[in-house]
Image 1 (cartoon, rainbow, N blue to C red):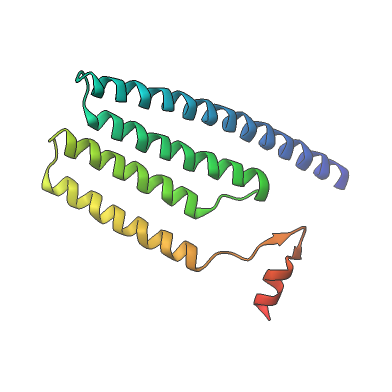
Image 2: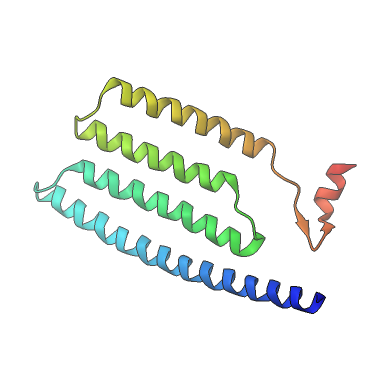
Length: 151
């Protein structure tokens, strides 16, 4: 019975590894396509056929994709999701939406206040996540740096 549990765990880990590798390649492809989109938008701004807001939106989208890429790459190594990467990506998404609303002149005061409150909460969560990082474990044995911190 113990053998079955180990084989199920191995299968689970292999599938998770495969899925994260596929997602990493998809995110890498999306970042590359996003860069081409940024250059295209810059060209349209240069020819005065497009708005600068599209360039800003595209660049912020790339930053979001980079944060997701970092989160998945970190998951590959540590097998856990770091809260800082998720909050960074969420903060960038909110900032991107604020930028779209401001450049499009389609915002209401209540909406901007809600986004500001959300950014404040996300900033606090990120600061707490940085201040209180979890202790690193490897193979049920404390890492030497973490072991010295516990004493």
